[in-house]
Image (cartoon, protein in one colour):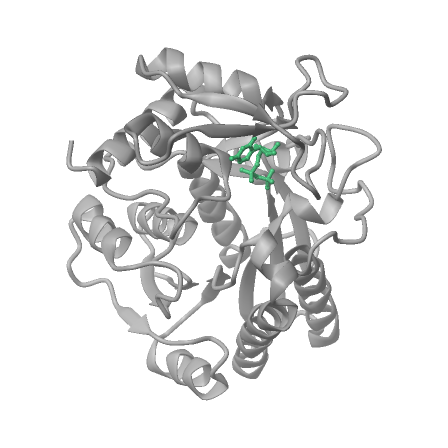
Length: 342
Ligand code: UDP
């Protein structure tokens, strides 16, 4: 029988790509979203890409415990992938309570419903932010976590702990996987779904594409005096489609009973570092466009260099990033042009 996966925050950037990959892998998907940080563009795109008009969409807030219980009753859900969360680092410093309340409560409601249902699988979207500025790169899953710099980062660390404690207390009834994402970028090759930041983008690639298309005047490169080969920050940029596929591997692993522990952790990255400057240059080269940029002061709270050791995900889950940075940056540009109607 077909298995059903609930994707909370499934209309957003990563959630919509995951929904596509799950459907293409043969899963039934229930998408739930409160549309607080996205519109219906990506959900419509998902329907076009998959050719499926019948994907259930539930407009709901995961902070509403009754609504969470209801969706668990209404659909025969076998696993949940939890994305529904706020994600702007700067905003979380300004409004910590908003972040703690939303990100923790929504996840606890999911876990409560999972616990009640029993024999349930929960996949949580965590982040490399839990490693802070690592003492050694690349980071493995055993690299110690560091105290979070922002309330946003802290919600990731706290949700990891909440899941691990819940799994432990459930004695096998609730199983969990934590995927720690590095820097997800790009868009679906169809250019029908992608990142849709509201207002001025915080992240590098949307800022690059918006500058290239003329929506922004100039990209600020935050710091060129870091102790790295070219002075700019080093990151592990992971294609969002590759990242989405990692979720399919993880969910399948859970549903097929292949987990080695009741709660597992995987780094989801390429394993290859790229500097901010290298990324800008690669974008210009592959797309044949100029990106107007200037060197600006360092951004407070930025990590100097972090990239993944993805060996565990490669060997244990059988997942590996396959898309080249050129393909990824071409897809990001195609998506920006699609948005501009070009
Ligand atoms: N960055 C930049 N200009 C921008 C946005 C980001 O130079 O407008 C740099 C940032 O300082 C960091 C890298 O790009 O070194 C990735 O930043 P992003 O916000 O995309 O992700 P993070 O690694 O902070 O989660």
